[in-house]
Image 1: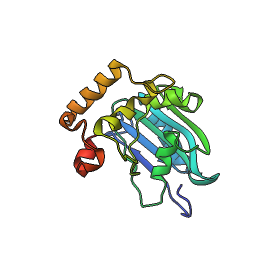
Image 2 (image 1 turned 180 degrees about the vertical axis):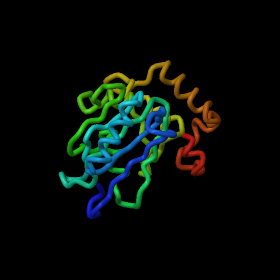
Image 3 (image 1 turned 90 degrees about the vertical axis):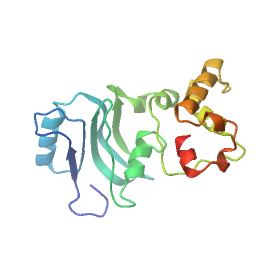
Length: 193
């Protein structure tokens, strides 16, 4: 249910019918008849990622409540809505960038809100619309930040980490720009990085 809307709910299910294998599904709302249908569908899924009765918002003010998401491994689900409806707030709460007001998030049946932030960082990657500050950073530096959860207490990269960074740059066709100032890249190149 979206804040300040009288009858807002959503149910999205992929598949031909209620008995088919579903890739991903999301339910937001408090309509109990739809929720019963929802659980019939979800029971048939091989869920890898799910939320349970999650509510999100800012400063304990709920923006979106009763969020239930179920996704099978390797599948994609998109959150679409008008500006200010809460999509980024949901993603930031899942990624633990801001606290969820209530509920749980499970990846492979493990509640990530009970994990250390470092463990969660090894499991989740989120690319939001916020621009990161990359002053005086090369492309290599930016990609290396993705290895941070795997570093030691002082944040040093191992030879294996550096090899993974170079192979990641090569994978996206940006190895030749490894030592280029990140701010001088085109927007398309930055997205690849």
